[in-house]
Length: 97
Image (cartoon, rainbow, N blue to C red; front, top):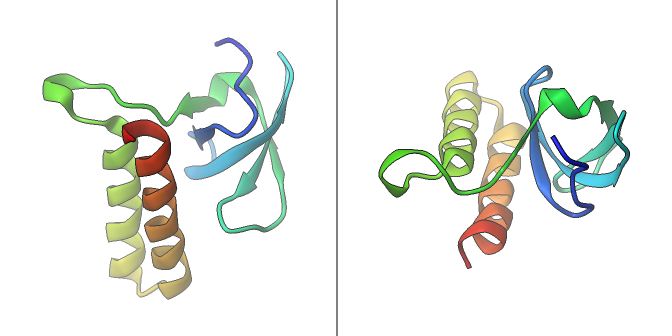
């Protein structure tokens, strides 16, 4: 994968978290949770860009965010549910505007 663009959204598949790219090199990517919080480091190979794609015009980014929101709601995790709602708004503006 090429270096992720600062400001883009990415799914960290090792941590099952979505974050905003704050800095990136070929070896490391630093992500920040949406809505703020402590940054974490990931390897580029563990990241999946949150962009439109998939069959029949479906967006894998939207599907991932919806799944995370459903799971957080099922767990009763109001904070994570709210984060997913914020993420969806950001994703919609970035990927579908």
